Length: 243
Ligand code: NAD
Image 1 (tube, rainbow, N blue to C red):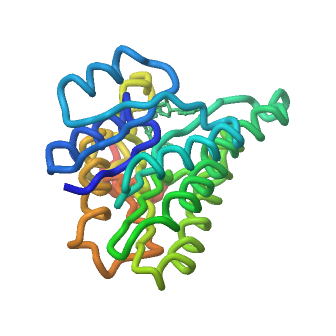
Image 2: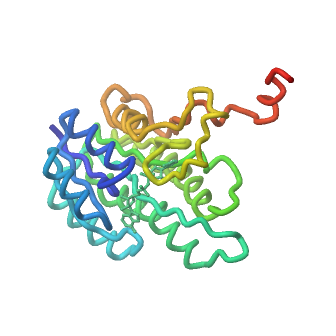
């Protein structure tokens, strides 16, 4: 089966994507920055190879993308790695802004250029975005901006790679319990299909978008948020029976 390359595949949603793809017959190459033990466990239990890379350094990303596309003939790329630094606006630094955009937008663009341009017809790229792209933020201004930019980049890549037969889409999660959300982030009460989603929910969307069944879908963002983004909190309160 064709190979896929998955930046940020050792833990959380990336781990679920790597396992889903490997269990669907893909040969997976997953990257990690920290969490060597988790990455090695993935390689032990699944048909997956692992590589360590720091995607916050564009020159390292460029060199690595070139090396990986010479080493493997890739037919799929899933960009899942992310940085999310929750800084109050008054103490947010330019370093946070730059680092967030490097990992969340610049790296997917570099990888798509290097790997996407080498893909043959039928190739597919999925960028893991976030429903934070559609709303204003408080403590994650750089993150929300990066995900909005990533959805825009997804559409542009779909335009330029489409004539080569390569599709580019975004899988756009809402609240997903990937092991880092504290209890208080439970969005279940406002989520029609609550509670919070699971990493496997996003893995299934990525798997579908990479598959030939999605052969006429490109430039799209598939939101998987249990319906959360369609709920107006006050309209929901209006519907509650009064005491
Ligand atoms: P996570 O923080 O658990 O995992 C992020 C991954 O990115 C890790 O594998 C990490 O090693 C990698 N990474 C971070 N910095 C890196 C760097 N400099 N170089 C290389 N790799 C780096 O996140 P998650 O919750 O599993 O989220 C996965 C994806 O889903 C992200 O793109 C995230 O934005 C998106 N998402 C998650 C949620 C959620 O509620 N968990 C919601 C919306 C979108």
